[in-house]
Image (cartoon, rainbow, N blue to C red):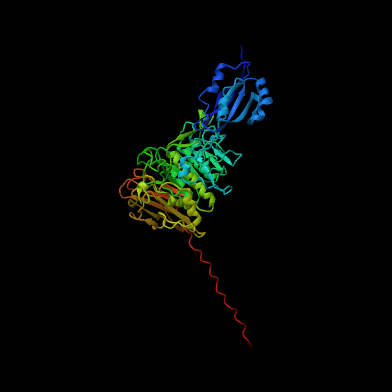
Length: 566
């Protein structure tokens, strides 16, 4: 007796975690005169479960003739749920007793329960739940753009926004210029935590999940996962130039950069509303990591906690840590195989914590786009949830002000109530210092090191020998802080700037990244920071003031003598 089988190979998807992997599936549609013994045994296998009073069963007849006979003589007597003519089958709703009889019929090739099948639903990562972002929508067209400086962006990942959803732009300061390819996967993972699409039935959900937030990518790191400080700085500048309000930097290494610090200071002085959110570092020590540890109101350092709000063992802790976010086993979209494969993975690190905070910052800012960066930062810090193990402490070096909480921060902005916050409530910017048209504006900026009381300075007009401004040693009392003084002076003139350090080690770079900079009408004239006991620099040139010109006194006019009268 011969049997004939129609065998079909098709591509299906097998899910490994959340990743859909194409595999080769085998469908065996048997059509034979006599049923194959191995297939007949399937009717009696353990897959049959008659535990329910009634259930649906797929009944595949042994051949076309058997199926036709059933349809002509028996179909009216059974409860038929669905016709599957293309495989000579019917779906029947049967009682337990009838099912056991159908399993023994000779004209039936396959008899099996119609199993329940459900869609693979998307996962809401524990971090999104922890920061309470799930019930808050990003406000489309609010003008709040985010930027991610990292290894690139896996453009085309089915769980990430593309240009078809919202504006996605980018910049690569390195040779090939491709920001939309992530050969390392780290940048895509970070971006996914911020913007993974929600309610699409696949993958995961990001902090801003409605695919409405414009995104700029700064590929400050190459596909190897590393880059240069100048490349990162170039990306920072490009993010700001492209209108980003929130910039995530899940990166770090090396020491502080005076160039980066100067860039941040200039942004602050120019009143640029931008917030740089950076990973505190994974060294598990109290050392400073940069850019997170720059002492700037524009930079937030983010520590990592696990799903129980306990500081991760790898998370660095120091007085620059501002806030914390979920950073252990964070599931997010990513890439592999040099960027060719779009998949998912769970990573751990402060790199994973930082985008939770950056995402929340952009999310709440979109509801209040007219708020300043200072107000957004204050709301984030003041509304953060301190883990229970720290008691009533307002702030500590482990997690800063606590774990970021989107709902708390939004409520605070909605009420505009910052009472009781650890920082000073934001105020309007002061009126810019200005001079009269016949005067020059001299501005002296000093960033102190860790020992601010040691620093003092004097600015002298060398043309007249007069001291025009000075700050004695002992005046500054806050370390790693930028101070600014301004004075109006007559146009022109030469000046000598003397800066001193009582300990004799300058203000850079033994115990901090201090610097000095003297500007004339917003143009830098002198700068420095590395010196010993003191340093003097000069600028300008004395100009001779012409002697005042006294207008000539006209000759007295003698009135004419009238002619004598006779």
